Image 1 (tube, rainbow, N blue to C red):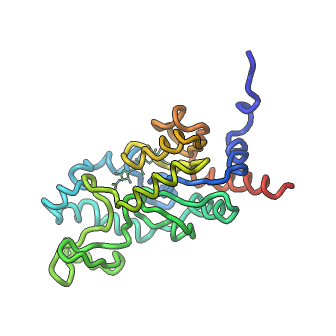
Image 2 (image 1 turned 135 degrees about the vertical axis):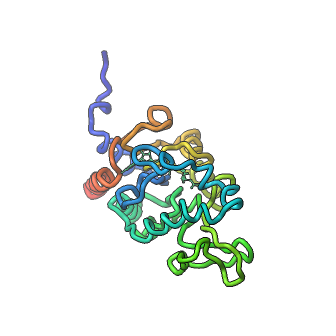
Image 3 (image 1 turned 180 degrees about the vertical axis):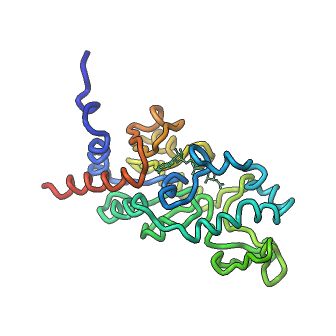
Amino acid sequence: MMIDPNMLSDPIERAADILSQAKSVVALTGAGISVESGIPPFRGKGGLWEKMDPMEVAHIDAFIENPERVWNLLIKEMKTVLDRARPNPAHTGLVDLERLGKLATVITQNVDGLHQAAGSSDVIEFHGNFAWQRCTECGQLHPTAEVDIARIPPQCDCGGILRPDCVFFGEMIPTEAMVRSQQISSGCDVMLVIGTSAMVQPAASMPFIARENGARIIEINPEPTPLTGRISNLPLMGDAGRIMPQLVEAVKERLDSP
Ligand code: OAD
């Protein structure tokens, strides 16, 4: 039996080969990239949706029906966790790749703002950003850090109830985020998919769009996903905070050597 010599080499080295030759790289990230920043994921080990039903706490109808309940069960806790969270080596690894000219845009499903905090310059927030709360009456935005949660649900000066400026289940993806993500996914030659279970549409369709248009897909995740072995050309199985710095070093070595 013939053995492909590529199959024998270290997957991180192979991923670095692909990245160092790439012309247009995009990253698609999910909750897993922020796990090592202390933010629990939604699915998989320790996932939030094992403890609560997303349709009862993260669907727009649940919020409209009982905002107080959704604030108490989900949003208050998110505020506490996200206030404390800081970027980890996976976020900073993406910034390093950008500085090396090997990453242009991050499409993230996360609302934690950690890619921007790390220094990524072009971040598409597919599901919005938790840094702001929006008045459901007048639309005014309030910085989440300044919202007083002594009284739940918090209110705007106009008396309207505040909600996170994020996408709830049952709501549309912001048009610009959707259109740009589709364009960038179809035009990239490598997509780095990090820490997403690839279960939630339409974000999960981006690797399919990229692959259909000829891109190679590198996936970083400690567990297999529906992409693994089908859509990803190269799964790197492990925690993003451990793998990203190794990947960055391997790319640097290739770019440094003449
Ligand atoms: P999920 O929670 O569904 O998936 C997280 C993935 O990260 C899983 O596949 C884990 O195996 C993986 N993971 C865990 N620890 C990791 C680590 N240290 N390094 C890398 N990967 C790790 O998160 P998303 O795919 O982002 O939607 O979820 C998509 C959407 O579902 C979210 O944006 C949210 C949620 O309901 C909305 O809020 C609208």
